[in-house]
Image (cartoon, rainbow, N blue to C red; front, side):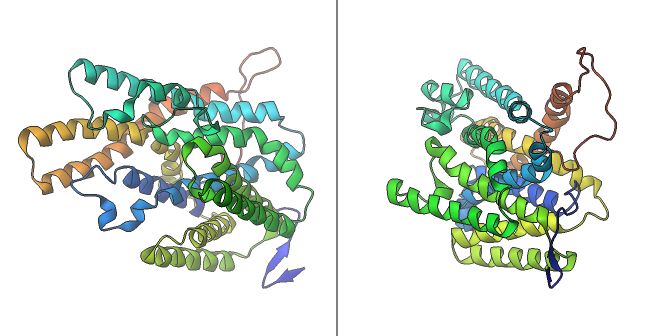
Length: 379
């Protein structure tokens, strides 16, 4: 059946690199840096751009987007038995944990060296050694004490590992329903979880503290999966998808101009993800494709760059009494440095590791070359 060109199909074209979904990931990654750098300037950036107080929406985007992309890329393969639970979790574990451990060790070394040189951080309470173990082992999102400070954004990686573990089971459950029912169930699960966390913990589910990270991430991840299962079976015409995306983007900007409106904002984020995934990539942008691939490195490294850079900047301000324009210039240089460091980290460290751990092997254990078997949108 078809309404306005929308029709149910067994499958729709796969998502690909270099399109609007990648553009969204790039923009959100840059906004994430600006959010984390909010308090590092002469005055909070949220004092003139209130949106930077609402960085939780950026994290929520990545949680929804993770469920969406993984279900679009791996969904049919997992359902067909081409990838076991163990294989899937191993792949995802190796995607996030090596980079996390490297940046954690880098930050530990930075704190030790600066301490040996007698340079104390401006907020030493955020480098309490008792907080480190839970974060280092990525268990801070499951009620394990600790995880505050240090590379604090890593809580979402901790929560996502739990989502990855449940992904195949959730996917099989979703496959039993038609796409419209599945989308409704995804929204219902998120709504029920939000009502429950408000009633029990007095927090909205999309803004839970890190010690309850899994309870925040899982409903958003499931919502992303539901969007993906819907998108895989319901064809959305290109013109309609573009219109939906533009209306959702304009609505999001308009809503954020007047306040949080978090539930409306999350709905518009879902609409933008759905629209971006439905627009065919007719002409791939090399720049967009490469920049989007670096988005994970931006996420995992920007907090460490912020700590290191502004540790130096704060010393310069205290010693030389730098003017406000100079301080803002140094702030902007920090943002540029975060992007440059993430790019270098991706090409020099993260990408070589991923190439090594994902290299296929024969039954005898020897490495073999595989041609044209990559997924269309590797995450």
